[in-house]
Image (cartoon, rainbow, N blue to C red; front, side, top):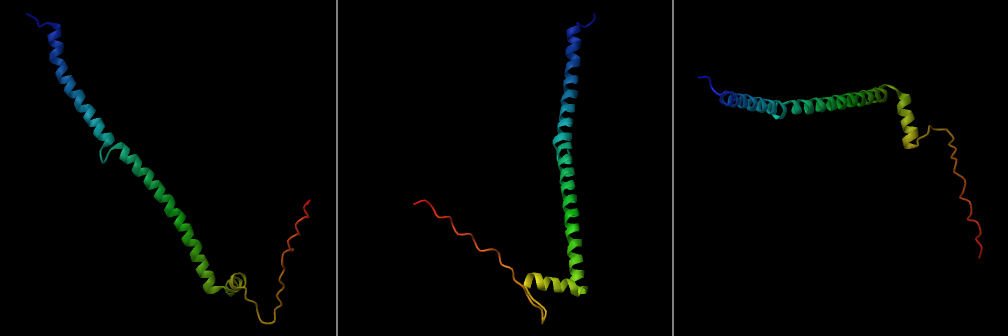
Length: 111
């Protein structure tokens, strides 16, 4: 006698449910685990941000190295800093100081 079709379906349902459950667990683990897809995306974003920061710091470092080199070798650069930041002048130079216009008097109000 042939088994009833519903009994055959019941027999096949359990292994299919188990296989489906295992696949769902594997998918969740691949997305959410320490080595999952979400963590991988976060790590790539962090890496890109760090690469940009390294590039910015390298440019700053190069500019500072140029400034150090100029301060060590270029007397004109040292003189410019002395004049601009310290207000120094060479002996015998005349310094002209221009002051801004005095503030305008307040208009007489109606009393």
